[in-house]
Length: 291
Ligand SMILES: [Zn+2]
Image 1: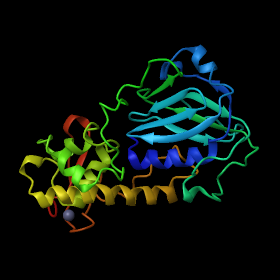
Image 2 (image 1 turned 90 degrees about the vertical axis):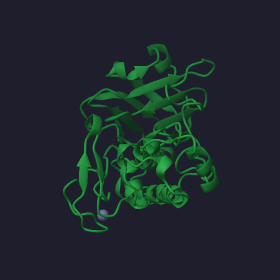
Image 3 (image 1 turned 180 degrees about the vertical axis):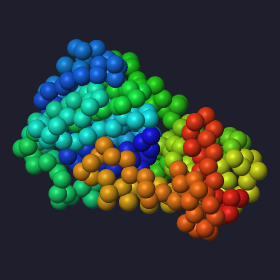
């Protein structure tokens, strides 16, 4: 499932490649992925991309009038491709973009002079595909009172990488959540963007066990969790900026320390990593160095 580091790199790459381009054509070979009418989809043609950004685990495309929001859920991925390149199977939505008309505002520094960047005059496509068909693409036309479920400000806390989520804010917000740490980190209303994989990584970095309760933590452990959240995500984004483009549809997770590495040696202490699967989702941790 794409999480904050994955979607940050997709949003930064797509923004740099697509902002300032008009949508030239739209197609929905998998119409069930789309929440909106065929007319609303067709109305995207001609609209210029002003911004592509991430909020929580959503990818948001702002056009000069309307907005498109993707919630990839478990398996949806988006590919940036030349129109002539072979389309992957299970492609549900294709947005085709024309030549760039204006420069993107504030592109991420790492995207400058990227070799994969399509030339301004070259047409380019985004292909959204989803083997499990759980993800959704929401069309949010201007002036219509429609939102994507889970995206409202009451449902989403601050993004985990938001500088406004300071240690003081963290200490305040965490008081309302006495339960297990893994659930706390994954709770989008507490903090947006972290899911099953990076919650394991953050807890390993903080040397805390996933099923410990927040109500049992010492104040310095609460602070360690904040520091681990920031450092784990910053490091992951740096790695993914180097390794993901131009295959934005690929999920790179091999560099993680513990998640989904059950049975292998902990990179910090050498203990064999433990793994449990409550509800079918893997939770990985180290009994040697997490308390
Ligand atoms: Zn360990």
